[in-house]
Amino acid sequence: MTKQITKQNINEAGHLEIGGCDAIDLANQFGTPLVVYDNGKIRSQFRKFKAVFEQSNTDYAVCYASKAFANTAMYQLVNQEQGHIDVVSGGELATALHAGFPASRISFHGNNKSKDELRMALENHVGVIMLDNFHEINLLNQLLTDINTNCDVMLRITPGISAHTHEFIQTGQTDSKFGFDLESGEAKKAFEIVHANKSMHLLGIHAHIGSQVFELKGFEMAASKLVDLAAEWKQEYGYEAQVINVGGGFGIQYTDADDPLKPEAFVQKIVETVKDRTKAEGLKMPAIWIEPGRSIVGNAGYNLYRIGSRKDVPGIKSYVSVDGGMGDNIRPMLYDAKYEAVMADHPLRSAIENVHLVGKYCESGDVLIKDQPLPSTKPGDVIVMLDTGAYGYSMASNYNLNPKPAIVFVENGKAQLVTRRQNYTDLYALDNQLK
Ligand code: LLP
Image (cartoon, rainbow, N blue to C red; front, side, top):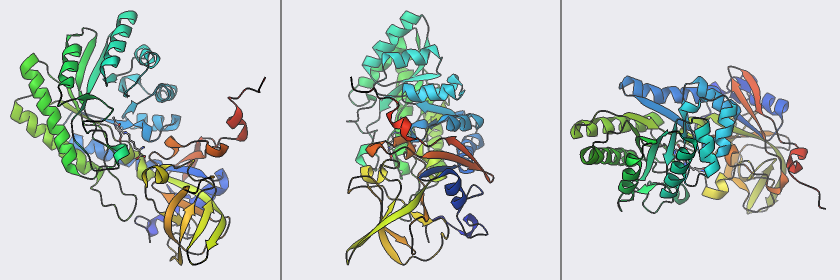
């Protein structure tokens, strides 16, 4: 049995139930491959984060890092939960605005925001621009002068902390491409420029140490370094940071091998650290902002596939193919990420074999799960990959010109199509005929 499928997730027909909907019915109604989100789980994680702050009487913002998964309905759901969002591109910003998401609750991140993207942010009165480098400070300054306006900014600092995670998703170490380096004094230089700029209001300081981080220590160190910095700038320049933003990165469980703390435990530690350290430094308690992505949507997402062909290599291994793969979830290939899967029509049935669950893409590496234990299967069966909600669809591609799947939100037994499946016409809609 897999980690989180219990009898409560199984309906009278013996089928897997997601948000009160039968997984087989979802596959029949909307087709496969299908991405399904259980909205109840998303809302519940938001509320757990908020409760930590509210119980400790701390000003806060839970800024959902929308790179983990973004579409119009998701931005609307975050808005219903009164969350903030972080966007990292003009595309995410445009979609959030299209969704009616209030600009004042948007933070705009990125290490190479273009002039057009910055202009778009200013024209739409985005809440805060997260300054990442000197080039960007110059660009923003020019724009603020041209448009004759001002804006809130935060400085993204590279705190010199290596979080224990896959090397591609570490960001807080000194040689990262993001942010102003603390140790070499770049952060201080950036502070002096921004502090002296009349059109930029420096709301606070930001650091993000990495993603899928399991240890408290990194967050504690980052929070503490940010407060040290605030204390230094208070003493030297009389500047008072209103916000300490510790980023996201709280690790979640994908398989039995993962044993993370609950995401809210990380936040608890961050709040305690900032409280203790600001008190010790005699600073006013700032607001604490967090930017969780994966921990909001990861465990709420399910990828539904239908089984097709099978290849048995006698004495070696068996491959069971599904109708999706690396195009809708690149994480196993890119990060060697591990997932678990269950059969939708009998999720708890005992396994009789271990197989490689593979996709339909023309690459040998298109393996979704290695050595997946399965009961007997046949073509047409629906198999559900669990915990695919973060960085699955958001990193989807049209490789081999396969259309991207549809996305369905489920809640209280009701299912809603929130992004339609791409069709073949979509695949060549941007093309011109050769002249
Ligand atoms: N804030 C900043 C500034 C970030 O760069 C990120 C993630 C987050 C927040 C959210 O981190 P989360 O809570 O989701 O861990 N594609 C990779 C993950 C890349 C994360 C990039 N930055 C993956 O599939 O694992």
